Image (cartoon, rainbow, N blue to C red; front, side, top):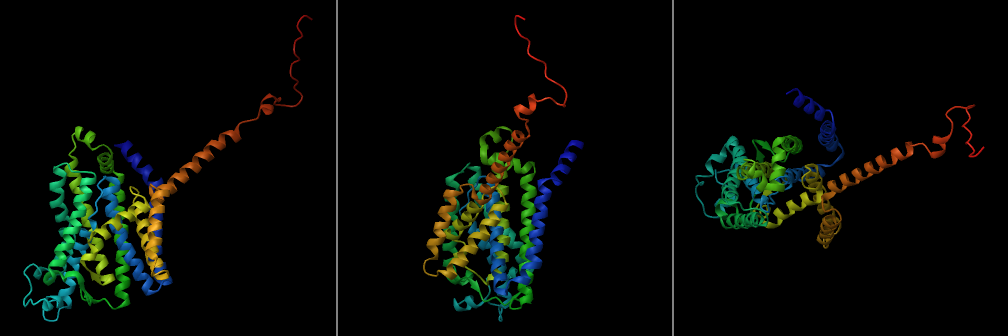
Length: 389
């Protein structure tokens, strides 16, 4: 017990403490300094990027640490967004019926919409619906020991099915146009800048909490088990663990985190539609993690911010050809930095440190002349003995 406490204390006073200090400093900059320096438009854009960084963290937990490459996380993200959007549409409905339902010919509110009138229920569904879908899919997939590329194909099919379902049920989901024209959130008018600033701060805090949760999880013994599942799942099974149950729990947690990101996204962007749950956005989310560096937690945040900032900047400067620049950046990042930007940075720092370590002892060794020279003046070396004298 005492040794365990000593090791934990050493970790808290070592690299982990420095990392937490850096994260806290960045959080203060984002909350205090950024709103003073950036315009309302840029703050809203940054808030959008930060919500996407939360999704990237969710994918890194599933893919980077547990080895489950999900190509359908857009579904979980969109489900969380739709859950909160349903509550916001009911808030904005003047006659108790959202506008798109009237356009589709409905005359009364569907039964499954009614509970979303309550904010507490909506917030619960933000987490519960994505986690329940992940449970349903994962129970079938992991018990059948489906893994690798086959798991990726199934999740990609999930994204395609979800898109088709939400597009086809226009009377209940808004169809292709999705849900928009939100006016309030829990009674607060979204048009006010103070409300948007509050949403931005909430997003920063949620990102910090999710990062802290995942850093604690991956740094514990459970994190070692996740890495063992990623690298040697069959060997771990022989030690008495149940990889299927662990992967199911991780998949559900990852889906719930993606749902939270979707709920934060909707009131700040003002729309949620089937386009957010399709195959393309789901693959883009994986690209953020790959560019930043999977299995690092910091990498997915950097990748999400960098890729989306580049996407926004290039589309503003080169509206006709920005996709080519973005594609070249993706290819270049994968070819030049196969383990991501953070992984490449760590390798560079490690190589530099090893080089300095190799140089330091050689510079400290005395030269041959110094070793042979007498240690004090006035002490002569003995004269060589002549043979035969």
